[in-house]
Image 1 (cartoon, helix red, strand yellow):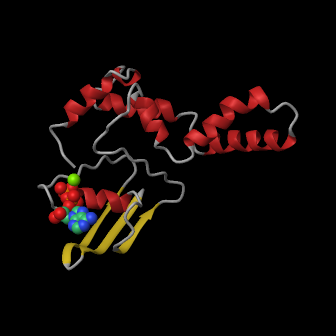
Image 2 (spheres, rainbow, N blue to C red):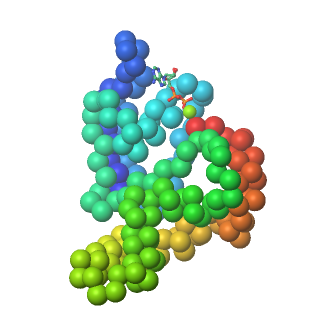
Length: 167
Ligand SMILES: Nc1ncnc2c1ncn2[C@@H]1O[C@H](COP(=O)(O)OP(=O)(O)O)[C@@H](O)[C@H]1O
Ligand SMILES: [Mg+2]
């Protein structure tokens, strides 16, 4: 089990949007949420990602699970690649990566920095970040995004491909 969800109620003012929404997600499962405009898909994802805490019920993730999200719409990302956008959305990733890349150049024999660097390496490993690019690449290739993820030019393609669906 990765996630166990039971939203007993979600309302906006006096409008009740969800009552007893219950499901779980198992290891290896891929889940799509399909529904007409306005049924509450975005609201559900807001709750799952932790952005929306204004509901009653329980959203339980297995210990050690990291929830990563991408926005439904993207503006002003410039030359950023799909890969760096996704990595940037992983909690802790950017902070740790910066320490790992930059500290060796400047830390010298500063014990505090060496300690911080060592801890960053440990944490990076613990979070599975050494394998994460490979994992993301694999997932993107499941969406026929093999290779293209390396290119910033890819974003418009991705957007237009996504345009058929709507969360
Ligand atoms: N912040 C909000 N305040 C009040 N009503 C909202 C708010 N966000 C969404 N709603 C309403 O909740 C319903 C579900 O919205 P939403 O989750 O965006 O649906 P979907 O993503 O399935 O199209 C809609 O009727 C919408 O108007
Ligand atoms: Mg939506």
